[in-house]
Image (tube, rainbow, N blue to C red; front, side, top):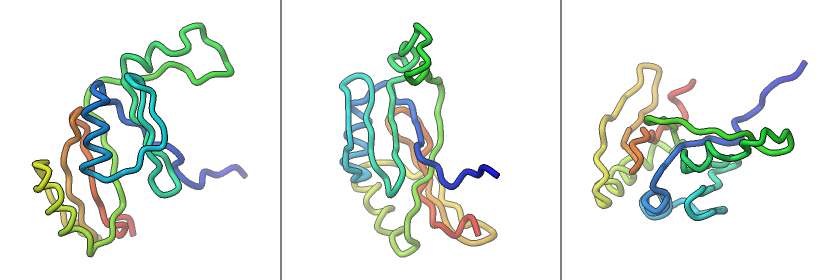
Length: 136
């Protein structure tokens, strides 16, 4: 039987990739894996990849319908993703976000255990830092 074992890529859409590059590289401290100015930014996160695309450019890709290339894609509006953190790191992340003037929208203590904090990237995407025990 076929099964899925992990999420390999997570995609968010960010029209202003310069602002996204500062946010994800400087504020969140991710190391850039690859980029194409005006088109995309890629970051490795653990064993997965965070892909940030300019939605206008990615929608226009592969309009000829070639089956050996990724299809065009994109969306409008804010998306969501969560990064896993260790529980002891939560106060340090809160301090870091405040230092970078990133407002924390909410902090959740989950009934089954674990904690999350939520904030926005420059494109308005909802970003969550969550302890792994939110999913027991």
